[in-house]
Every structure is written in C-alpha cells, then in structure tokens.
Length: 165
Image (cartoon, rainbow, N blue to C red):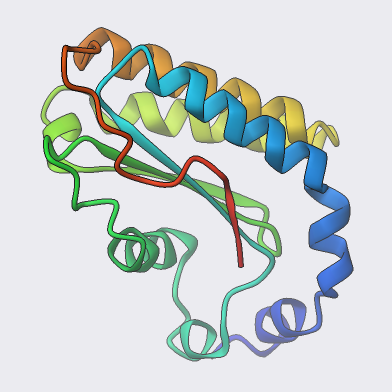
C-alpha cells in the first residue's frame, strides 16, 4: 500500500477534474468521437477519472489495471465486431491508457495505441488537455478507419459522450 499515492488520489478535489475537462471540452470530445465513428466500424469510449477509487488504491492497482476494469464495466468488449476501444485518462497519476478489444488488437499492435497515449500525456503536461484528447480521438479514428472501415451496417454501440468518474 502506497500511502502518499492514496492520499493524492483521495484528496484530489472534484472541481479540479471539471477545470481540466470543462463541459465544452467534453462536448467537443463527444462530437469528435461521433464524427470519427462515421468513418469506421470501431467504437470509442473515452473515460476520465480524477483519482482511483479506494478499492483500487488498496490493491495498488496501476492505471492499466483500472482501465481493464472499466473496459469490462463499460462493456467496451461487447460490440458486434469486438471493435471497442477504451481511452482512459487518470488525472491524479497523469496517465493515459488505451485498451483495444480482440478484433482490433489482432490488427493494430499495442505500440500504436501506446504512442497515442504518450502523445496525450505530452499534451497534458503542456496544459493542452482538450487538444491532446481531440488529437488522440482523431489518431485512433484513423487507425480504426484503416483496419475497420465503415460498412453498410455501422451501429453506434457505445455512448459517444465522455464519461467522467
């Protein structure tokens, strides 16, 4: 158990999350996801969490482990073509993780998703939260369009609006 990390996560004020991603930013990200999904059969789910919940902190969960939990909870795995992508932003540790369902993971190497994560983290360090998020959605959309181009049937299976936890 990492006590300083626990305190950082538990004491992070809720207003800070809203300052980083304001309502207009979330709307822009949601719109970018909706536009992106018209060009491919993949499904993007964008989740922002201020800090890890107590149970995850007690287990000393990494941001990747928490992203995997949310991948299941948000049912990102439950798309018709196994083409769901979770973009997870954890503010307290300033980490980003992208998890791809097996249909996409078979075609796009994890290194591609990791590069998007590191670019987002660089933007976030520069205070460019909205720009970093929009660039990540755009790049993820490009990869999905390349490997899962839109077809005749292209349902919207996951919510486009980002989830704030």
